[in-house]
Each structure stands twice: as C-alpha cells, then as structure tokens.
Length: 106
Length: 267
Image 1 (spheres, rainbow over the protein chains, first blue to last red):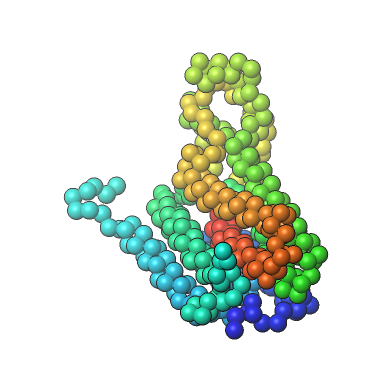
Image 2: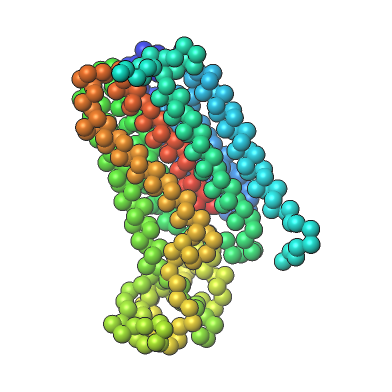
C-alpha cells in the first residue's frame, strides 16, 4: 500500500513536517558551514556539501514525496531514470578527454 | 464520457493514471536538469585555473530562498493531507501559504537577477578593470562615440583574476566607492548578464529554467486553489489526487533547488 492510501491524520503530518523541516534546516546550516571551512580544498568542500545535499534530497523525496512507501512501478521508472542519468553524466565526463584523432588540443 | 482511473487505481499498474503520468514526466525532467548539471560539471572542470568564480552570489538571499522553498514543500504536503481528512478550509490556508512562498521566491530571484544586470565589469584602456554596480550614466554617454561618463560603485583591479574569487581576504577588504569613468577610457564594458562568461551563462540557464518551473507550478497551484477547487464539491477524491500530483511536481522543483543552491552559491 502506498503512503497516500494509508489513513491520514493532520496531527501525524504536523509532527512529520516539523521533523523534516528541522532536518532541512540542519542540512542548510551544515552546507553553509562546510563552504566556509578553513584549511579545506574546494574538492573536499564540494564533496561534503554535496553529501549533505543528498541527505536533504532524501528527506524531501523519501518523506514529502512518499517515495519510501511507493508502488513497484514507480521504483522501476526511477531505476531507469537513474540508469540514464548516470549514462548522461558518464558520457559527458568521458567526452571531456575524448578528442577526435588529428585535432589540436590547446 | 467518464475518464477512467482518475480515482481508482488501475489493476495492472496499481496506481491511478495521473500519478503514473506525473512520475514519467518527472523522469523526463530529471534528464533535462541532469543534462544541465552535467554541462555545469563540464564547464567548471574545463575552466582555466583561477577563472571559475566564487562568491559572486549572495548566500543570504540564496539561503532565504532555500528556506522559502522548503517551507512551501511542507505546506504543499499539508494541503494534500488536509484534503485527505476532508478539511477544505485548511487546504485553502496551506495552499495560499504555498502560493505566497512561491511568489516570495520569485521576487527574491528577480532581485538577484536585477543585481547582476546592473553589475558591470569595465576593461579600461590602461589595462586595469573597474568592477561594480552602475550608479549613473551621463545623458551624453555613448560608448561608440566615446562621449560622456559612467559612474560605478565599486573598485579597480589590475588583474581580472582578482574579480573571480570574492571570498578571499583581499577581495573582502576591497573598498567600494564611486568611480567616474570617461567613455573615452573604456575598452570594453559588459554587465554580468548570461553573456558575461560561462559561469553566468550556466547560472542564468539553470536558475532561469528552475524559476520557470516555479512559475508554472505556482500557476497550477493557484488554479487548483481558486477556480479548480470547485471540483471539491463534486468529486473530492479526484480533486485530492490532483493536489497530490501537483504536489509531486512541486517537491521535484524543491529537489532541484536543493542541488542548485549549493552548486551555484556555496561551491
């Protein structure tokens, strides 16, 4: 049964939303804090910030979009999407060093 | 004619048709924004050392916008939950909040865009660069005829790279004061619009597309809050499903911003 088919109470959702908003606030604060960290190079900062962003995104997708308790068909659609997005990023990154033979590289 | 499976779940998919439709649409949206994010990675990784901007955007405004969108995602969920428990008044309240939060987001974004359009970088004939916000243009200012003057509230640097990272101690110390520049001394003058460099190009493309999604979502939510809410009286279950579908889109828009904010403002 998907989340949208479970019995809904507003009080339950008030409680959930308070927790989610608290986590989002912490995540935003964490990202800003990480961006100002001294003695850290940009690659390390970017990795920390994106890791926090992923946690933030998990809360929104998992709880607000009810993805944690959805139907199998939706997971299947999303698995295909993830596959193609990884392919999209992979091809782009691969193409960065893939110059056609005989072309000058500046 | 009755449209099938607007309320009941289809036996083969297990969900109502609109829900499958919105998830397929969101999958295509992931590919659209995924393409732009990969373009961002390509541009950033390919930038010459020291030439990728840092600190060009106002983190405070970006943070406020992030909070506004997070709050609007929550009011959207509560609007749907209010429909589920048949509390129409609360639905109206929560979705009115969503609309106000969305309009506030767009207002702040417009202010940020305006700030970039009045921010100029001027290459001077002596090899230096004046950078700052446009204060005044004299009535006879004409760059082609080399007449008149322009006044910026900013500072002058000798190396363009000094304008790239505004989070360095040196950049923070820079004193911004009115600078009057004669048109005859100007080699090139350009604002920080999308044409300025690859950073502003990808910034305006990605945030602009996102803002268009916010605008579209706001229009749909406004319709469902206003004239579209008449369906509540005739078919509340179907109306609730419409709120769920529009809410899924809205959460997706929030998800995109969750990555846009750190990528553009913080890194």
